[in-house]
Length: 616
Figure (tube, rainbow, N blue to C red):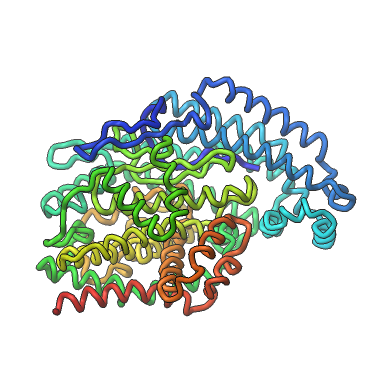
């Protein structure tokens, strides 16, 4: 058992924040987190009590069950051991979640950083006595486990967890080696993740004489003014270039750390450990990557060539790729307007979906405003089933920020529904973890599109959606291809910045096509992408989720009867079922080439619609 204290971004203090806080730049009051549902503070008596409880309980479980799990499986009683293991996992997860979320509010605060580091070390140390549990389970013969499931319904409840756990049996190491890997995790990738996060949140990017954090600079890359976009591009690349040695070193260490682990565990392919964690077969991911790369000319190449013409250019500069169209509506949406739009879209799909989403807005479960020290991006943290998820946003009022709210809220709803599976089975594999989030975006987009009668505004909405899909599918598969190049090359030796830059330019040219110019400076863009550091090979989950949702939505439109009920059942399953079982009720199979074709055809269809409208 390794209790991770999370990964993500930054913020401010966590006092009585259930009430709305002053907003940013006229966007209205916005909520901030209230972490008291986890603990009242870093010095809370309950936190100290829970740490002591976990320390005592972990030792008690080891003393009572170590070396005896086989006998319990044969004679009965294994379910009791699993329940105790699950219960202490929930408490440890609560502590880890609080430590990370407290840190995420303001990564520049040294006290929060120290608390995070201290909790990480304590959780790793106190969970060490529990390492035997899963190791012993994986040494039990399949026939013995099968008989135990039949004999004890309470144990059979956990069968999906056992099945997933035992897939790792070929890669399990001797107990002392596993303990070493566990203990050194706090000084391995977790430490480099923290360094990356704190570095990114502290960096300043000079744009037209102003020092900005990363999130506002990235937002300027979508500004209507080309001069501002170009200035933002220069500010971004300038600071990344200045810090390239650090980012190159972090990338090398992360890749080498993974190579060591993979080598010891006997993984043959650089991404196999991620596939195992995602409960997806390598051939399914290979099929996804192949289908998307084959579609580059029909999707991104074609769209960016069209966009260049709309902007009156022969070729898009790198800072123009996400530029708004000339006729785009550049108004900002207040926080209350965004909430209303998303909740209306959710409610039209199902009142139950709206009800599940509602508590996020008035209970201190969302941290929305941009603040000094708060890292860029957005995430949904599930915490533990005995609590509730928390959503992190950096809301700036743009249409994409509205879609980000819809996206993260989908994650939150999914996590609430899956919580019923309990701490061991609530977690959803990454390939399905994006389902509710992308579906929430699609609902919100379709709702906005249906309400838009102005032809130019409708065209702009379609174009934005296509770009979001390209960024989710094409770009993320390009990121996956980049990671494959990096990790394969790292096995032969340390990589120089120039090599990483070259890999980035290669995959960018292939995925974006000839209509996008890769201007000087663009080669360093790989450096700020956190997924490469936090979760190597995570990125294909976005493409998987988008194509899956496109296919799901096509099913919803063609056969809506009973769809809502099946959809909720899929989300409730959490990690208790394989993706093949969850998709079967919808008539979908990720191993079938038609599955990916259907998802990609929806993107192509929207591009066709844009092409037709521009010629009308």
